[in-house]
Amino acid sequence: MKYRMYKELMEQPESLKRTLKAEGDRMSRISNDIADCRRIYLVGCGSSLSTCYSARDAVAMNYELNIDVMTGYEFYYHRKIEERDSVVIFTSQSGETADTLAALRRANELGLKTVTITNEPESTMASESQSTIITRCGREEAILGTKTYMTQLLTLYRILFDMRTDELSEGILSELDELPDEIGRLLRDTEDDCRGLAEEHAGEDIFYCMGSGPNYGLAYKLAMTMLMEGALKHACPLYSGEFRHGLIERVEKGVPVIFLDSGFPGDELTERALRFCESLGALNIVFRMSDYSDLSPLLSPFVLAVPLEWFVYYLAHFNGEDPGSTRHIGKVRY
Image (cartoon, rainbow, N blue to C red; front, side, top):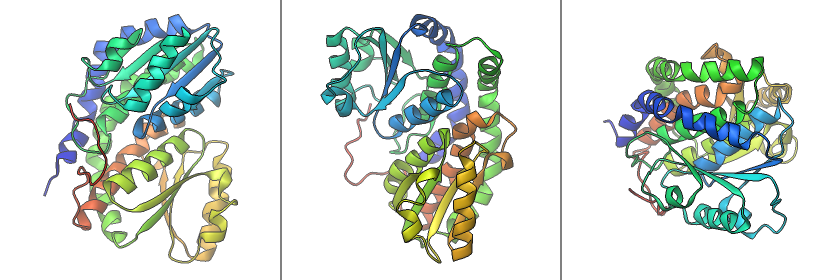
């Protein structure tokens, strides 16, 4: 049986291509416009928040930029927003997310530069933001952001890395152009293995998800939206460096721990945690960037998202659940 999420998974490469073609020049203009800003705020909720975490950490590993990540209501109620020479970039699939919209309106009241990344051109956020990037995904109905996640993350990477003109940024921008074909290949090549992995772990009820650098954002998405909302499993995201605070006392034989490893400096701690879990007989589930792609490790949230999407899709399926359905979440449909 193929759920509606299956179709949206397979639409990811074309969504990336359309977004690059239609919005690439606008992304570059925004990069130039905000290049001299003293502070950048990235604001989102759910999967959109996870893209903010990944983009921030990918940039912060390489450049000295003042970037803060906040949820919509955190920004709205925050009393220390730096108003001079600041820009706020909002991410929302629907452009109607209540808390993110409230934050946008506050930013406008404060006179900050505002940029919205959304999939809906007629949305309130698109109309009220000073600048808008429309991700070209078509309608997304499944609860899990797949094609909207990919295109939001692409837009954030393009805008933030295009603010610099060095060999690293030029290399990342070039590899972003290769992403649609790479994602298409990964969708074809990883489905069968991840279906088997999901069947093997279908009976587990809780998963710990761990990553460092840009992979923490993906670990956050994996736990908070993919596993809990899509597969209806308990899950907890964790920075690799925080393994020894909390999880080290809870991990034991048979406990599933998902490791995201891309060879970042912080993945030295990922490897330490992995070895410790092995010594206890935990159920280690390891996703390594080097097993899937030769692209820059900084792009690992894009690459590792694909096998994780298949894993969660089939995890739900083997438990008799539709990975695109909801029980309580009032996701905006459009």
